[in-house]
Image (cartoon, rainbow, N blue to C red; front, side, top):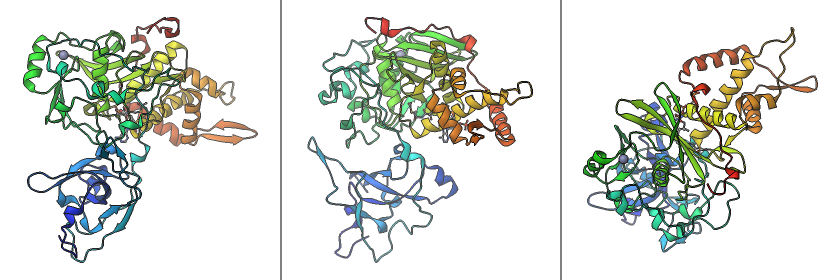
Amino acid sequence: MATENGVDVLDMVSEGCRLPVLMTNSDEQSSSQSFKAIAEVLSRKDGHGSPRFYVHYIDFNKRLDEWVTPDRLDLEKLQFPKKDNKTPVKEGKSISSRASTPEKEIPFQNGGMGGGMGGMSSMGGMGSMGGMGMMKTKSNAGRKRKVPIDSEDSQDSLPPQSLVAANNVPPKGPRQTGSLVDKTHDDVVTRMKNIEMIELGRHRIRPWYFSPYPVELTKCSVIYLCEFCLKYMKSVKCLERHRAKCIFRHPPGNEIYRKATISFFEIDGRKNKVYSQNLCLLAKLFLDHKTLYYDTDPFLFYVMTEFDSRGYHIVGYFSKEKESTEDYNVACILTLPPYQRKGYGKLLIEFSYLLSKFEGKTGSPEKPLSDLGLLSYRSYWSQAILEILVDLKDENGERPQMTINEICEMTSVRKEDVISTLQHLNLINYYKGQYIVTLCKEIVDSHERVMSKRKIRIDPKSLHWQPKDWSKRGKW
Ligand code: ACO
Ligand code: ZN
């Protein structure tokens, strides 16, 4: 399609432009075969044949960002970036600003490639809640990488990107909180997914976000991970060679929980540095805005596995600071995509609160939560609180009494989270000068329905663990 002055419109589509793009991987797509959403072009690749565009759908989470072919673009509604808002320059590279407002629409006389705007609306999707929480660390400026577990494999000649990027070291000085927000990571490179596919055990998984794997690996169509030690490799041959000598059939560290096929391993980020770093690299593929640092010393990692005759297969994990000034009991939490939406996330959360209970504390996840993190925590908190409330019995014919603090003590959920959950469920009422919680039959019925579906639960009796007082130790 040509403009009035004869320029091909497709040639004009560049970084920062916005236009409707046909989505093929959103939930909306299942209800409408031709769902288009406004997207910003983050990058353009001109190779052989027609160009490809890396787009971010404005009202959707970044995990849906993707490369698209021109036939999916609605060029009729092409908007160019505002000049004054454009391209902050960093290290000689231009960065398109996602916040930039398009300047104008270019009207076309001839029909565009993408057809009309039918079905397009400004969706208030889940994307806007994507968090800025960082993987946490102590200052590691100038720290050298320790010798990896196995010095022969390909991984060792390919250090992860941040290890070699001098300007990526976190600020010096003590950590005030667990989080470090590092804006230098939100550049044109890290905004785009860099790994096409990973193979982990019997799963092929398409990553959601950027992770600083070595640049050499970003050229591979698939990268191969040892599912037990999480070492990354560039080919199936390397993986086979590695498998023949890898001694692991489970994560390192101590198995602190086992019930049926589910186990939890506690891994000290200082004692098992290479494994912890590999776990962080893997996790970053599915965690947005988590900047990866390589000082894993201040963290413990709790890896959940499912056992079969071949070994203990990683399902998910959460990390936890050894000492948290804010009493966070989870830093980052992840269920690997093939296992998601099956209740494992809630199992990880339940386990994190059981650890807090053993510590005699209440805890809360590090803020802000991601969209899926918030949904999962909301659901967990609601069920944990309702489980207690629906079990309360009348006392001598009187209404049962319970304080918020008692709920916190029983669930190990922090007070603010208990209150926000009760408010979210709309259970708090003001009655005769005091706040009371009212449970209607519908709430109780729906709670019982969802709990009957929650088949796997954490059994406190299967935890063999003593909390450590890290503040009393000279060194983590
Ligand atoms: N769409 C809608 N609801 C969802 C979705 C989804 N894609 N995924 C989870 N939920 C909700 C559901 O409400 C579910 O509750 P329900 O049983 O009442 O329907 C609840 O979350 C928990 O579902 P699970 O199956 O137990 O959780 P899952 O194993 O899918 O894990 C998790 C949840 C860990 C958040 C997972 O989605 C994930 O790893 N996401 C990527 C990483 C991430 O965002 N982590 C949280 C960051 S915040 C932080 O780290 C502190
Ligand atoms: Zn291995």
